[in-house]
Image (cartoon, rainbow over all chains, first blue to last red; front, top):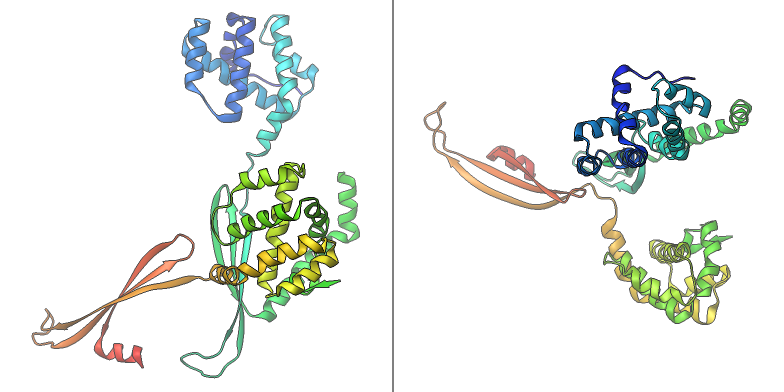
Length: 199
Length: 187
C-alpha cells in the first residue's frame, strides 16, 4: 500500500536534502521526541541556529517527518512500499536509506504511542461498599430493611469520578447473577471459536 | 482450607506464594518492616528507603520488596477487618508455612499492639457519603414587609455546613423556616 504525499507535505520535506546527512539524523530525533512528548519550540530554534536554516523551515521539516512516520506506522506499510512512497520526493539514495532506517527502527514505538491515543470509556478504579440496616424512619418505627451502599470510583483520562449507588441485597444478588452469566458466555462454543481464530 | 483472617475464605494464591519470601527475611527485620507497614495503614507516611535498607540483606529484588509490603499489608488489614485475635492469626500463619519461633510471633505481637488503632482507622475510612460539620442558627423577628405592614413573626435561619468526603470541601446549605415549620422539624 503506497502513501500518497500531498504537495504541501512534499514541500515541507523538501528542506531535508538541503540540510545534509547529519542534520537529517538530528531532525529525525526531534521528530521522535515530538511524538513522545509534544512540540518543543526551543529545540527547533537551537537546531535552526546550528544548521543555519530558518526556524520555520526546521519546524515544517520536523512536522513533515512526524506525519510521514505516523502515517507509515499507522498503516504498517512494508519496506518496499515505504521506499516507493518516498521515491516520489526525488531524494538521494542515501537520504532514502536513512529515512527507511528511521521508519523501521521506530515503527513499534510509534504504534504503541498511537495505540494510546484511542478514546476511552470510563474504567474501573475501585469500589467501596457498606451494608446498612434501616431500623426506623420518621414515618415508620421498628423496621428491618437491609441496604447495600456502593461508591464506584471511575477513571477517565486521568479524571476521577465517583458514582454512588444503593440497592437491597436481593437486587445485588440478581446483579451478580447477571454478571456471572455474562462471564459464562465466554466459555460458550461461539466465543471460544472466535477467540481461537483471533489468536 | 478456610482461614479466619481471610474472612472464612480460602487464602489468596499470591499470599501463599509470598509467605516463602517473608521467611527469607530475618525475624528482627521483619518486625521493623511490619512497623513501617502499620504506619502506612494508619495513614502516616511510609519510609520506603528504610524498608529497602532492611531487605537488602536478604538480597530481595525490587519486585519482591513490593510483594513483601503488599502481603504484610493484606495480612494485617485483613486480620483487623475480621477482628482476629493475635493467637489465631499466629496459628493460621504457621499453617501457611511461616516459621513459628520468630517470624509469626513477632508479626502477631506487632499486630496485637496496633490492633485497636488499626480498627479505628479502618472504621473512619469506611464508606461515608457526607458528614455534617456544624450547624449555625439565628432567630429573627420580622416587624413588617412590603406585603403586610404588621407582620410580627419570628423566623429561623439555619446553615448546615456539610463536608463532602471526596474533596474535603465544606458546602454551606442555608435554610430559612417560619416558626411553625421549625416546630414541625423539631417534632
